[in-house]
Amino acid sequence: VLLDMCGADLKKGKYILAEGGDGSGMTRTIPMDNALKDVLVVWGMNGEMLRPENGYPLRLLVPGVQGVSSVKWLRRIEVGDMPYATKDEAVHYIDLLPSGLHRQYTTVQECKSVITTPSGGQQLLDKGFYNISGMAWSGRGKIKHVDISVDGGNNWRRARLETPVLSKAITRFNMDWVWDGSPAILMSRATDETGYVQPMVKQLREVRGTRSIYHNNSIQAWKLDVNGELSNVQVG
Image (cartoon, rainbow, N blue to C red; front, side, top):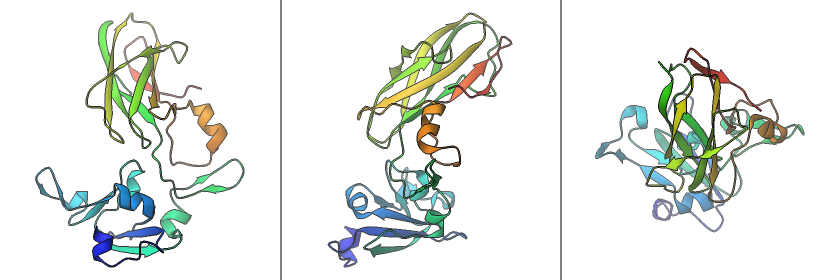
């Protein structure tokens, strides 16, 4: 609607460039198909105007895509017929693949989950009953199910999903567990409605390589020691 009001040529225009008013001049290219489908220009949140830290006076909201595309402090939108190779797309937020090619213009936030309780930095005071809980999301649609392992991925149990389960939104999950006091490795694995399964670290590296700090949706593991302390550990 906004592009129509501004007289943009939506037949020739294939992409939009969103530019922020922050010091770095953050810019992101968004395919026109996405922009016309569910991208919002946001001015308020929770019954009040946007706060400065959230992008006042205007920001984009691009569901299902990496957060950097939801440009804050929006000051300009440009329409073009090809992707814009800005500094934030040619140098940052790209993945150098094993083939040597760059993976640019990431448009989907891949399926991911993470256990938040218990998790790294926390401590279980005694053995006994605990409720393992966390969050899952996917830019491809709804979360179909989440499985939890307490033995480093050897065995998996289906977790409960808390409603509502919405498309491209955070879904909370939980599972009851009785800790017997022995060492454990806690992991969660999400599957979305397209059938995409959250990968192990090794599986993701085989596809994306090891030379990127971005777009890591691999399975997060927490090591639980006999003293109840939890810490980050890499499995698989």
